[in-house]
Image 1 (cartoon, each protein chain N blue to C red):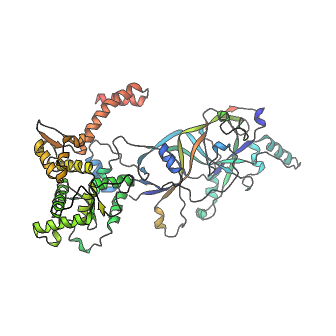
Image 2: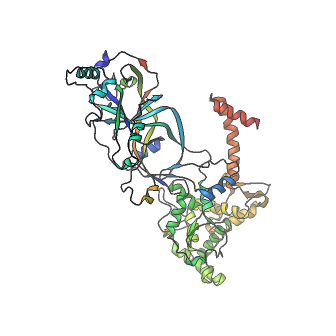
Length: 158
Length: 416
């Protein structure tokens, strides 16, 4: 069995978008983790899009949908606060829609997690025989997560 | 409300989602990956198809999982295990969906009251710009229902067994196998070795260690491992050759000189026809096994030039290999004094006094009778170790832990 390569860095640097998360949760790639008990149900665009578009749509830029879920809030966090102040970590709100809120916290992971991705090959399609050799890459090593273990509670509209 | 003053971050879901896996890192791997020059890691699987089936078969109860993937750093190996979670882990990315026009303020009505008000106002024909204070967005781009964990199996990775199965058994110095394959283009020796390593699912360092320990070598385009008898035979010639040519094995010597002396001695003995010589690669493999290696230095790759023997390792290796060759099991045990004398005879003259049973690794030999000694194979060693550890640890673990799985596991075992 040929070994599968796991590169320690991402091949592409991520696009630079201002990171609104607290400093502690910011990573070079911008990626962060959010753990939730249960799932977020998203009205599926997939059915509409797959039936509407022909099969060869893969060659085109895939259509991207963004669905608003709610708002994320760190009520006790202040960017001006001292860096070693961790009290803000104890409270995070996630509003889902306008009338539900989940309370959570920021936790240090017991062990860091590597976010691993299949490396996109620079030379696609042509000579497809080469493509069956997969290469993976570590996009980021994350040490904290936003963790919601409680159930949502009803709240007044903001 | 206090929360009003803190900025809120718009949280969205992006479709299509991307494929990510989360890999839990032991501290040392995390440090490695976040170091200045992180090495490339490899995922390796055991050889598939026929060889693999044979493994499971001969394993009898060793319970090697059929399919597995190991993560290999340059020096260490970890087994990967997928752990499902009922929680969902979302991977977030900062986003500028609004700026890109993927989100319109009208879409935000579901999450924000001011946006809702603005939408209502627009419908009334009362066009107004809303400052939503929601310019900052994070979006979930992937959801992971499981993580990959790394662990080191108790019984090791069985690398030596897999490596052994990939090598041909070189059982006699007069071996003519492979001679007929003249039509084959012999691949470069290193390529042959690399091909073998690719099938051994452990780190490079551990592969090389196993290779050197087993005195493996490449000869005529194939990888071989000599039997203990062959190793002893080669070693004997090395020692004799050194004596005849006056090479002092206790000091640094030129490996090429030693090889020449071995060849000279051989010619005298059998009038050497060209094809009957034993491979130089085998000679080098045996020498490499007992030379001093600098700490952290690579074991393989560079040619041996100047070398000096590692006295302790050499004495131990000669004793253990002799035992393995001539008293491989309890029924073939040999007399202890006979063994000690033979051991002495196989060492350079000056090291004769070094010989003592305490020199051997403890688990490698046993004393079946009052005056006899024999070798303990690795398979037997594994088995006794396993028996000991399971009985002792299972009961204590079950007592200590309140884990149901532990408790029931033990009960099941007792029933059997």
